[in-house]
Length: 386
Ligand SMILES: NC(=O)c1ccc[n+]([C@@H]2O[C@H](COP(=O)([O-])OP(=O)(O)OC[C@H]3O[C@@H](n4cnc5c(N)ncnc54)[C@H](O)[C@@H]3O)[C@@H](O)[C@H]2O)c1
Image (cartoon, rainbow, N blue to C red; front, side, top):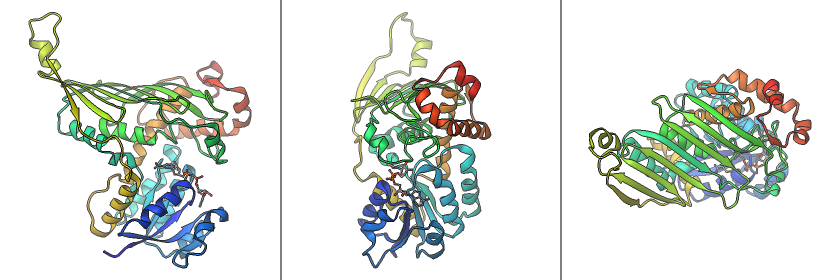
């Protein structure tokens, strides 16, 4: 197979990691890189086989590449993605697809306008065997009807040094959000991948509870799905050791994913049937505890998504994570943030204009906000402000 010539834009932590991963693949080769910070290009300066650019427009105009990997901060994902597609390249975008729903629309339009080009997103956690197994158990009906889901994902601990490491990080203007937008896109994607989209969201969030930052570092959301199932989503970057526990309550019992282990407490008789037919007043169905073998991690997860992307370009087939699906986790996170900041129920699909207006207000007031509002957001002042 001819190696796919690939350009990477944004050569920071992830761009560099992707360059190293591509170096281990036999279906792609990095031929161009672009970073607006010339210092980031130092490591590739001596490579005759790699073009280097500090100007994104030149990168798209002159880069010798068939595919582009976008690994810049989030705000630039949609505009750079559009440029990649419009210049005829295949596209893989880092998560999240953008900062808010409305700004992603031009990218969705560009994907629709270029159906012959492959467009993927780096949802590497979809490759984790335990996540794939959960998806399989749901899709093949093994769990029966799902009635409640509960995901505590508070093991995304980040230190103040992490937040200080990039000027764009954890600011409304530079990043556009906190734990929902940076760390949790993976879990929000898995939530929608497993359970679909909820129809309404309530939430409480806290800005700067644990860190000196502008954005939320803790949030708890309540979800309601169209079929009546309910959900709780808890996210934090301030807790250590933190928790990663997904509990799925279903007609066939209960599936718990925690500590990388998948445990199915399987009712011998579905609980709805048992409840309708038993003559017992207090009994419960017999239940088998099954440990499902599926690893809770995948050390090559990013490389696997890249490998899949390049294989689909050359040979067709199914993407692990189509870029079009990236909008769902973003919209879910937008809904949670809006529900928390405005202290109200948010129905989905969300109003993209309303979210953008809220974000613009957060950006313009962010300097004073950092000092004035370190605490819970659900105050009357916030209700009237946003
Ligand atoms: N999939 C994952 O597991 C994962 C993990 C970490 C980060 N990410 C995502 O990767 C993206 C980058 O994060 P990072 O940690 O690598 O950030 P980073 O700050 O280390 O790197 C970003 C780089 O982009 C460059 N840049 C900024 N704007 C640019 C532009 N317009 N054109 C060209 N270069 C530009 C910066 O100079 C910097 O070198 C983020 O969107 C983040 O959410 C994904």
